[in-house]
Amino acid sequence: MYIQMTDGVPPPPEQSSLDHRIQELDKQKEIDDWLPITSSRNAKWWYSTFHNVTAMVGAGVLGLPFSMAQLGWGPGITVLILSWIITLYTLWQMVEMHEMVPGKRFDRYHELGQFAFGERLGLYIIVPQQIIVEVGVCIVYMVTGGQSLKKFHELACQDCSPIRLSFFIMIFASSHFVLSHLPNFNSISGVSLVAAVMSLSYSTIAWTASAAKGVQEDVQYGYKSGTTASTVLSFFTGLGGIAFAYAGHNVVLEIQATIPSTPNKPSKGPMWKGVVVAYVVVALCYFPVALVGYGIFGNAVMDNLLLSLEKPVWAIAVANLFVVMHVIGSYQIFAMPVFDMVETFFVKKLNFKPSSVLRFIVRNVYVALTMFIAIMIPFFGGLLAFFGGFAFAPTTYFLPCIMWLIIYKPKRFSMSWWTNWVCIVLGVILMIVSSIGGLRQIIIQSKDYSFFS
Image 1: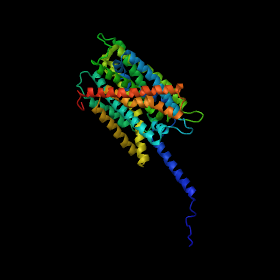
Image 2 (image 1 turned 90 degrees about the vertical axis):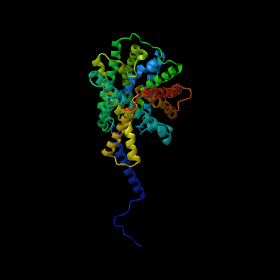
Image 3 (image 1 turned 135 degrees about the vertical axis):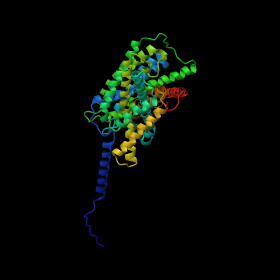
Image 4 (image 1 turned 30 degrees about the horizontal axis):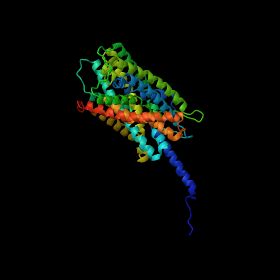
């Protein structure tokens, strides 16, 4: 039986398969061009500087004197310096591993984890920790923004009736219902630059105002807790507070993904330059605040240094306003990878069409959720220590080292081998003890707290 082909000869199977593959690649490119992390790769090296400063020098810097009070002079200074060195080293590892496979970039933390641990195990190890870190930071920054707005209101209008902290958290959250709709990292570079400048500004105001106040007459530097058990647990809390302060690793690959890269000029060059400048700024912020704040107030310092200061009124009010402006930018830096994860899940796994409606719903729901949790548990010191230990220590202090050992396999007992194992052991200890201390701190603070106060 003869059948005439009216539409011409059908393409061979190989051509059909190739066409299908091309369509899939085009679809993948369309999705990547829409997702926050991969949609723009034209960032300059200095973008990484202020993105890293904004990501790292956040709420944690104001809690450093409180952490020092729980650790004491010797252990506190030691942990501060060790943390600065270890986290700079692990951040260098992350930058190096971004493009270790020729022709491929690990644009997200979990992609690197999948390469190191395997497709499925990498997701199970990295994604929960990264989500806890990023959502946890956003919650803490909601609390910080609300507290700083409240403090600014009290200083600027001392005769006004007091307003609940819950309302100030809502006011702070309102800015994110707008800013969260900026599409990608490069689009928030201006916000991030302002936030980085603000971090250096309020840190300087915090320690200079403390120094101007002078050492308090009844200052005490001994451990405040009455019992040995309480002292040890408070020590654990202090470790968590410092761990929280070094949190930029969770977004470093996502930041590096925005920098252009060629075989002759890989992205690690400009990224590392930006990281070094950022870490100089980190040192200028962290060490004066921690040492001067603790030196002036001793173990009576509050878990947010600016809350311990009252004069000069105008300077402290301005500093609190700077904190608000900074954590607005910091919130966006840590929220962007979460948006990327959720939007990737919807468009790649559930086959939703990339659209502004999907983005509008996802991002508004996220902001509302972090705001609601912040209103329920606004315990700044306890949240710092708990999140610092439970999630920040792994992703910052030792997971990069584990992945380095798995991927590069340095010679046993070599300098690289020993360095990574020391970081891993210290990081695991930090994770365990600071989580315990932070949880205890939250429980203590919650005894006298009523919801939505």
